[in-house]
Amino acid sequence: MLPELPPLPALTRAEGELIDTYLEVVDLLGRINPARVRDTYGALRAAQALAGRAAELRDALATMHLRGESELHTTTIERALRVLDGERRTRMVTLPPPPPR
Image 1 (tube, one colour):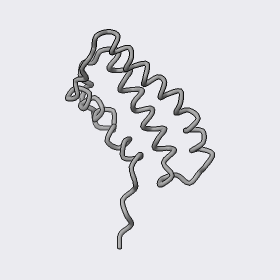
Image 2 (image 1 turned 30 degrees about the vertical axis):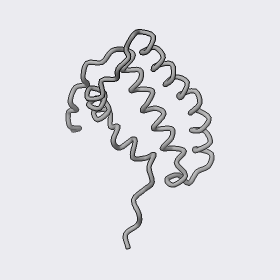
Image 3 (image 1 turned 180 degrees about the vertical axis):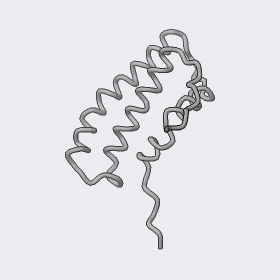
Image 4 (image 1 turned 60 degrees about the horizontal axis):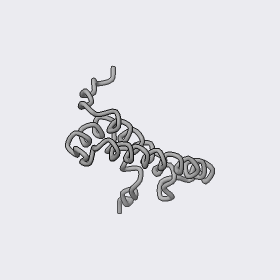
């Protein structure tokens, strides 16, 4: 049985869209990361999808700005990203650890 995750903190719809789209972009960047992938076709498909997701990320931020949401509540957003496995997902964008010597 899977452990129960903590509940997501209360977010505005725009904050939720920002977090979801940000994590989609991160996932695509992880699939493109040449230090982690071996399949050029999969990386190519992820790169092609990245432009659309980046535009959605821009739109989510623009929506927040237009609604007068001028500040990001980083503590709340950080909690949401942790619940949504953001630490593991963002690790895929970085270099893998060096091999043991």
